[in-house]
Amino acid sequence: MTLTGYFNSLRELGGCRRIADDEVRSRLKDYGSRLRQGETSGLFAKRESLKLVELTSRISTAAVAKAKDRLVQAFLPKAECIDIALATNMISVGLDILRLGLMAVFGQPKTTAEYIQATSRVGREEGKPGLIVTMLNVHKPRDRSHYERFEAWHASFYIMLHSLAHLLITQVSLECGYSSSAIRERVYAGDAGYGILLYTGSPDSEGTLGGLVEIGRKIDQHLRNAIELGRLCSNDPVCAQHSAKQLLEERFLLGAACHGCLLISETSCERFNQYLDRSLVVATVGATGAEFFTDQDLALP
Image 1 (cartoon, one colour):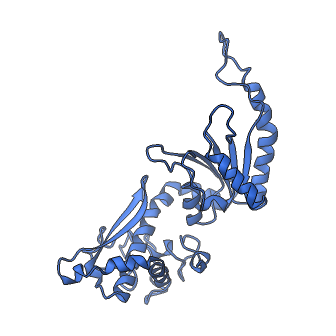
Image 2 (tube, rainbow, N blue to C red; image 1 turned 120 degrees about the vertical axis):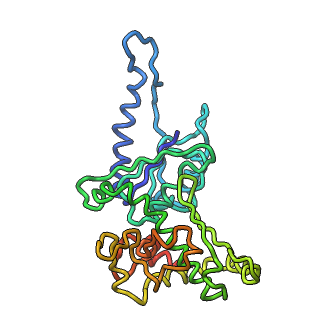
Image 3 (tube, rainbow, N blue to C red; image 1 turned 135 degrees about the vertical axis):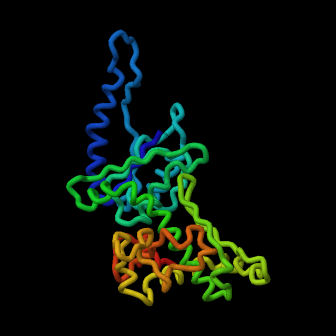
């Protein structure tokens, strides 16, 4: 199995490559001689070489393409298979190799989008889940914060998708003539993947116009408009600065969400307008750093 290593910087990647080239290579040569008491042959074969590639910006495009071709090859006798692939955010998109199943993430990626994109490079084959090991640095405040809130942070992915679904419903109702009560949502977030389904839930003529199909043809435009819609609320900064921990308001399942931005008809929402926070989707006037979509994402063509 190929180990894929993900790094936030070339400096950290270079340090790990030095360790792999020196210490790991020397240790592999001795593994074949390690025997338990009474054994005549060990569990490990003697390894004379360690095949390692880089997927970074400091190597040429041709070398990156060749490394990807070698990564596709399975572990067969005399095959040019790869033991370790060290990479930066270059692998976040465009690396669709089904056989990859093991990843080590060194340090918390800078954005949630980058974290999801990078870790989704492994375990892509159906029926063969991948293993992702995240290694955080106790001396870095940001890494320590993610360690303390690791489980809760992963659970927030659903809240982000749910909030984005509400923004899309509002955007569609504004531009395409649908009322928000005529559109319903289904949010998928789990081991099988992530996704949003919008469908018409009205049996009358409004629900049979077929307009959602045309909306899907321009989903990139509607998505951008929906994200921009979440930046500001008519109740800001009060809405943006709301915290679920505020006891007096008794809105413990809501973050930056109110009737001016995210709340829609309860018949359209699968959670009855709970588990919403637009600050997880895009930066607001009250919070930055937790958003999934950055200004760079919105600037892409």
